[in-house]
Length: 280
Image 1 (cartoon, rainbow, N blue to C red):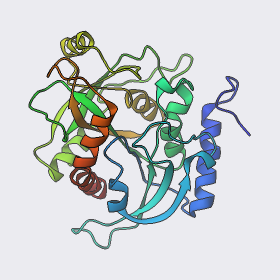
Image 2: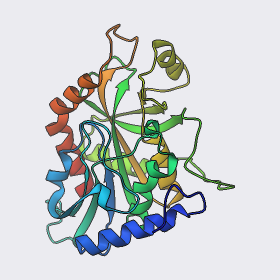
Image 3: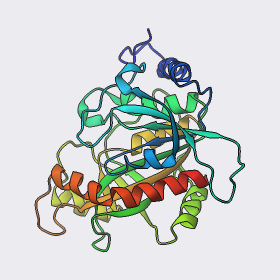
Image 4: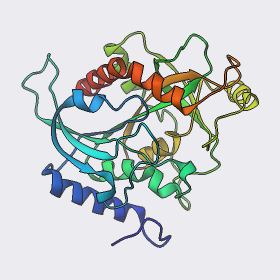
């Protein structure tokens, strides 16, 4: 079997194996949209429509069990419920990735972006990337969903290998952001800054992110978005502000705070995400 850890292996070969496996076990030949559900967003899967199949992540080639509390260790195939305005629309299917591999886990970049590459090979043309993050804007309290307009990648790495040049202008689709605002006109948008983690940012690093133009700080998403663009996917990014970033309130940060904010906001943001996906 092709191995993501082998530098001689084409990572898309492993993605093809994963997509083939998912097609076989789910009975769905093609998925139309993919979702990566970060902290706080997991409940959206239950609201999207009918679950066709659910597979433990670690059984799919190239995937691993989640290493972070708050992430679900399964991949689901869901028949998306048609919006009320189009009850007779053709059936569409979502590939829902309940767990992601983070760069700070030390497993390399390829596993981090394996999910979006698999989704592209499985037929998806759109990917929705979600996360829980720290916010720099005091007006965005814990529980605020924010559209990602752009990002700053401070991980000092890329998912692309060799002389692979990809244009990242409008990486986070303006069309999809406009569509999301038809579902919720109150949605703000901002620039997401990814640090490597797993430690939280220092107050000085948060101030630096703000001076660079950042509005949100976290430890995921940007590498997945780059890989998704390379694979031909249209990208929508959504962050859940789980806490104000370090130094803004003077209070210490904790992962428990992130989990609790996600739990409290979960029903509301999950319903929002489901409506957005159904409208795609």
